[in-house]
Image (cartoon, rainbow over all chains, first blue to last red):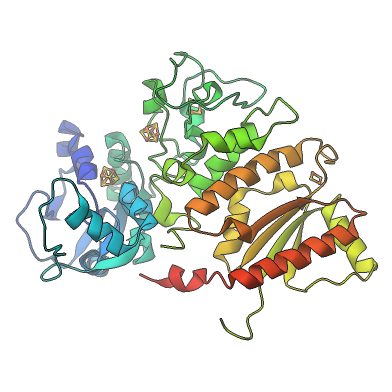
Length: 298
Length: 142
Ligand code: SF4
Ligand code: SF4
Ligand code: SF4
Ligand code: FES
């Protein structure tokens, strides 16, 4: 089996997560030839006849588009590895700004930058695309493996299935179903909204019921509810479940519906007052794949 | 702005009140612009933010949601839930750069045909002033 991996608009964390398989990786790669892997090998050309391509990262520039297209042409099976590849990921929040604003911020305005002429690099660098995309906007994807990064065990399961010629499967349900925190039987009620730094969360009860904006209800299971188990609200890194089209909109809906749901006359003003930044909070990982994937007036 | 452009408005109206209001307006032959495509939903509480966002994505220049008056919802608290979602959604729209005026919600009972016609006329004019949203062109951009 000939495997190629590559990285586009990403942080390489998904590759590192794969390495976190440790010895299991040796077993997994027993019959595998790694033919292309810029993270580990000094390679320039993508060889022909790739069986499986694992692509980490989304699309941010023209080079990303070219590499994705070439891999699609040469590989039998293409896997989107990680949330950046599947939904654009955190770099996707750049879609809230124009490219000019971004370049200006990065090359001119940052406090530590010395660039008196205000030069923006333009030669010998690939041009930015108009916005960040999940790479399924550019090429056809066979399997998606979300997570920022995906859990090593999920990566192993998916790879094992593909190597065996089987269909890999992801849990289609949400994180709350695998979260051990106690939930009210009568359904979700959020009495108030608290910032993560406010108060001390009860160690056993659902965080959302305590007012901490945990994205569990709108997020795909698979990580074993890592963050809530450690007392930290889920920020939604695994993206939406099979049942929703837009993770951010789903979360917005859940929170607004459950906010003081036990009282009759609730003034929505109090809710909105506490939801200052819903887009970066609820679409932190999925903006480029959401229904409105960029700031419209940018 | 293209001369032949007409606003496209999607109006989600709850079965028990606002849809009735639209009907009353129709039966009473009250004039309002034909820019609204009415989608009947059982309750405003059924309308989720994603429905409104999807309408914009698929070409609406304005989205309207009509429900029963607060306290009159056929399912008791559906419109209270919707009210909170609507206000949270407004904040979201503002942040994502869609003028919040392109999104409007009202409480209209089945007997308030006149109110329905008036709200639709006003909303039509608001959207005329704002112009087309033109999302599709930018959605196609790489
Ligand atoms: S999904 Fe997360 S870990 Fe993977 S490339 Fe993106 S930011 Fe890095
Ligand atoms: S803590 Fe988060 S993931 Fe766990 S049940 Fe509550 S909302 Fe769901
Ligand atoms: S709990 Fe949420 S944010 Fe944390 S790893 Fe799991 S999906 Fe990602
Ligand atoms: S039935 Fe009209 S708003 Fe609920």
